[in-house]
Image 1 (cartoon, rainbow, N blue to C red):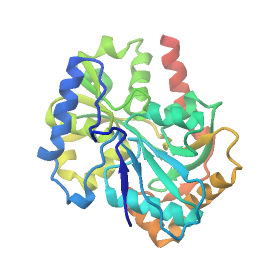
Image 2 (image 1 turned 180 degrees about the vertical axis):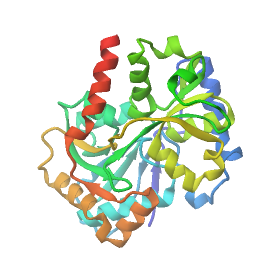
Image 3 (image 1 turned 60 degrees about the vertical axis):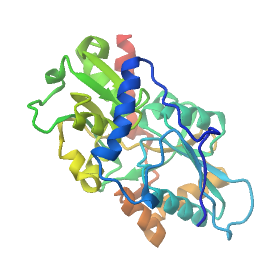
Image 4 (image 1 turned 90 degrees about the vertical axis):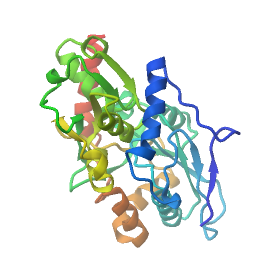
Amino acid sequence: MSTLFDWGQASGQIEIKTTTSWEVSVASRVGRLSGSVVQRRALTRRAILIGASSTLAAPSTIRAEQPFRFGLTPVFLTSDLELLEALQHYLSAAMNIQVQLVLKRTYQEITSQLISGLLDAAWICGFPFVAYRRELELVAIPVWRGKPNYQSYLLVSSNRDASSIADLRGDIHAFSDPDSNSGYLVTRALLAERRAKPQDFFRRTFFTYGHRNVVRAVAAGLAQSGSVDGYVWEVMTETEPELTLQTRPAWRSPWMGFPPIATSVGNGRNDGIVRLRRALIDMPADQTGRDVLGLLRLDGFTPGDPALFDSIASRVDLVRALG
């Protein structure tokens, strides 16, 4: 399979957008950790920088028509070229149409393109799905360890004695993304229950724009604690145990709806979305589909129920009420 990468900038460099000099420093140092803390993988399986746009060429047997644009965010484990190629190949074949994978660094970029119609569908997070409930429609939900659910973890170093958010007061804390449920909203809601905001509770906070980077920041001591997707951390314990062994979950949230596949409202019955939903649900019956699920450590996909995200909606209301 041939692969074409569109990095989004002529120079091929990805700009790290941050809001403070502290975040610039941390973003730079976290980026360097991939070569020092995490063992380098073969070049054929190297990380695709989050924030890049990637177009993976479809098999020549797929009939020529407008490509189906499928967006991915850091909620998705986008670090493996083999995984991306397998996903693109499977969806193109199962849907019988050229599928174009579009990767962005932030949730906001993917959500805005999805709502505006620049993307046909996207694997997003439960937070933007709830926040833009009137503009988005559910396509499917991943099934992990037998359930369409996951948790958020408050992460600390492995040798630290902490068991609740109260133990993290005064920390330098790493968040994943301002539109992430597990990487931001859950912690904001915990603080809102205490009538507190991050800037009042933590000594300093920053965004890493990737759940893996939250783990790296805590493992390296760049952050004393972090908010992370529990699914990502659990998968990393299998794929990068030398990194996760330096951290541990101090607290786990209740179960919530797993980050969903969504489309713009009213698109649910469109031919492309119908094909996508069927391709996702049929994954376990296809060898390439099973390969993709194996790389993702998922059981499969289910049509799901929007009610799975009610607890996330309650957290949004709680945070908004605090102002």
